[in-house]
Length: 281
Image (cartoon, rainbow, N blue to C red; front, side):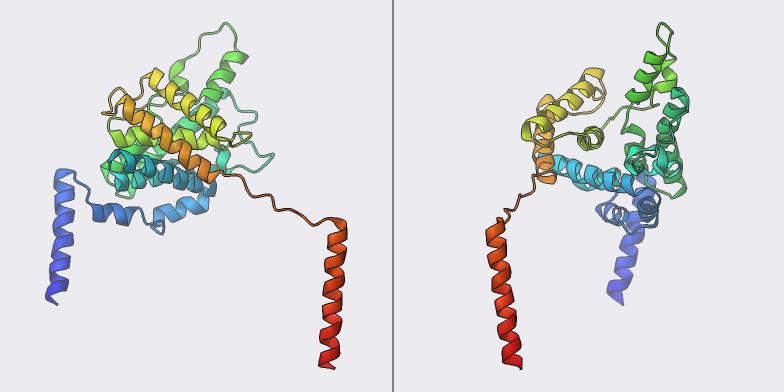
């Protein structure tokens, strides 16, 4: 009984400290990252492709965070929740679409961009409604930073040559990552999403993709506010390449018997079956 009272007191104390000082404990992170939590179960049911993407992002980001000595538990939890806003319009995101299904067809490019961009705002709203801690909401807000959904932006530019684009229609509201964990998560999110479209999975193709995506993010200045070094970023790249190679490793091509060997094997099986039948009779 005394132990029970002590445990309950400890939980209450942790909760009060978290609420008062904006601190998030390891216990809370473990609870939040339980994929059986109602919000994560809802994500897996409404947007199964997004849920799988979030799991993969979590694995990539955790591996990089562990290598750098960053907060792996925090980044795992942030990754699991970063795309919960996609539950509002799941079919508009490629990972939830089936072949031949494209609800963007016929929509103006700026309208498609608005739907895509709004998953951040929707995610923040859903998280706040479900009392998700601010530290996790920060991952939702920063995982695209102030980037653009380039497909729709470029499509609009191509369809409207010579016209001036209203960039605010095609830009995420941000902010950009301001912690090392958020920067890692942003990299993991972009790399994981793009890796699924590679025509082949070799070390060279994976490294080229990882370098291209993260170098572009660096060039755009998305990590300027985050305490992450160039050496850290190179380590993150190396971890991503290693993990993606493991995820997309080539399957073993099992050899097949030639025609004569197949016939010989069938004859042996037939002979064995006859022998068993004779013994049983």
